[in-house]
Each structure stands twice: as structure tokens, then as C-alpha cells.
Image (cartoon, rainbow, N blue to C red):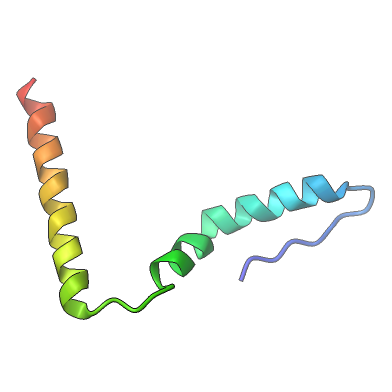
Length: 65
């Protein structure tokens, strides 16, 4: 869990900005969104395979130019 302590003479906006930065760096929000709903293992494998296929297609297209 990301934790941010508000420093003396620090505005709330600055502290919120630091908190958001730490949350994004730790990947907490992305992890939450990924696990928000249950995915069957077969669906998870299918999505992983599709992502790999898409990456490979993109790399081949980039190397061909």
C-alpha cells in the first residue's frame, strides 16, 4: 500500500500529487483494475496469447520497414 506523509508547510495538492505518483509507480491501481473481476484461467491464457501475437506482428512490421 502506498503511503505518503504530508510534510510541514506542504500544500495538500503537492502531497496528493506525490501520492498519485507513488501509486502509479507501484502499479497498485493497474493491479486493482486487472483483478477487479474474476477471469477464468482459459480466458487469461487466451488474452495472453493474443497479446503475444499482437506484439509479434508489431515487431515484424517494424523490422520490415
